[in-house]
Structure formats: C-alpha cells, structure tokens
Length: 242
Image (tube, rainbow, N blue to C red):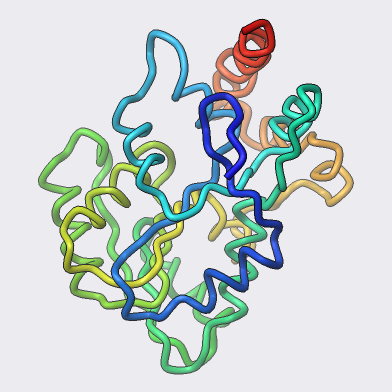
C-alpha cells in the first residue's frame, strides 16, 4: 500500500490488479474494492469527515487510485500513485466473465440488466434496485445486503454512488455469509452501456474528465466540482506543510 492524504492506496497497476481480482474464486468470502477519487478523499477529511466511509475504506480489499488529479498532487510529494480508473477496471473485469458466471447489480433501473447482458454473453445477471435515500435507510441497506448474500455472484457491481455504495459494501461484508467480489463503481455501468458518455481519452489523460462531466450534467454536478472539489488543494497543501 502507498499512503497519501490518510488513504492507503493500492500500489498495483491495472494489469496486476485485474489479474489478482479476476483470479479470486467466486465462492470466496465477500470482499470489496473501493476506488478513491477527489470526492472520496474530501469526504474523509475535515470537520465533516465521514466516519462510516472511513470504516468502509479501512475494510476494503483494494483501493486503486481513480483520480489523475490525486496522482499529480501526490507526485509533488515524491509519491507515486498507480492510477486505475474505476470505469476501466469495471470494463476489464467484465471482460473476464465466463458463460455460467453470475453477476449481481445493485442500482440502475429496469433497463440496466438488459443493457449489460451483451457485454457478458452467457452470464446470468441478477439485479436489485434499492430505494432512494439508501444511506440513511437501515432496512433498505439490510435488504440489499441480503440480496447479495443470496445471489452468490462472482462479481457484485454496487452502482448507487458514494458513499452509500461503500456503506453497503461494508454491510454485506459484515453479514459473514456473502461471497464474491464487490466493486463500488458509481456510474461505470452507464458509461459501459452507452447510457452516458465518458470524456475523450485525451481529456482523461490530461486529468480533465471532471470538466467533461460538469459540462454534461451542470445542474447535478456543479456543486461537486466547483464548490466541494477545489477543497482537495487545501487538504493537499496542509498535508504538505505537515
């Protein structure tokens, strides 16, 4: 692990990470992957620190860096963070799915499973769509966790956004009877199925994917990227002084 801004990032690059996760037996005890980005790190700092998210992070199997901005800030400190974007990791793991594998999706809508099916021919897909307000709904969290435990899927894609998907991952792990690998993937399924468009590759490499998403959904994302997001520079500056 490589520690930066109080997060233990995974040192493995994409190839090594995919190989390790894909080789994990489908019936192994449930474990999950979180993908720290700027939004997550901000939630883990300051007066509003999200202790539930911090606990979920502490119990995660892997924490690959999902942000080139974080990687560049770390580089100023002489710290190398291997970037493995969550959407790319999701796509690579889906490519390892074999006929007969079972996949569980938590989130999405009535069309999601059908749109994912062509990406995993021969696989069985099960889906649970929890209600809004999942983060504060203990009964809904328990219901979703029970669904995953019963599904016995090889991969469990938790697509309900941060921090509720991380809360749910921890809830599933705490049950003790679930199996498979969980991935906290946010909007990755929408990108892979074409329901949403990712930034062009050059913008991704330049660390400008956030601006593309902001322009695509300004009403929903303006606060995240223009108000909350810039706090990462103050957090990094304070850490550098410390």
